[in-house]
Length: 78
Image (cartoon, rainbow, N blue to C red; front, side, top):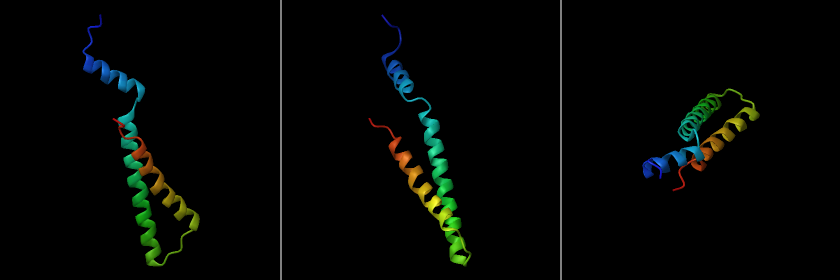
């Protein structure tokens, strides 16, 4: 009945169920890298003796935990 290749049909069905998955993974990687770089800079400022607000450090630690977790949850389940 259908002239679509079964492999192509499976790929299109998978893409329609999770659109923009590749873009989301790229964003999670970029956000994770940014969070870890920000944490590294904050830790270097603390090591140099500068004062930082505790709220900013907690936000940075939270970002370092959340973005890699989202990347892990977004991986392929097959």
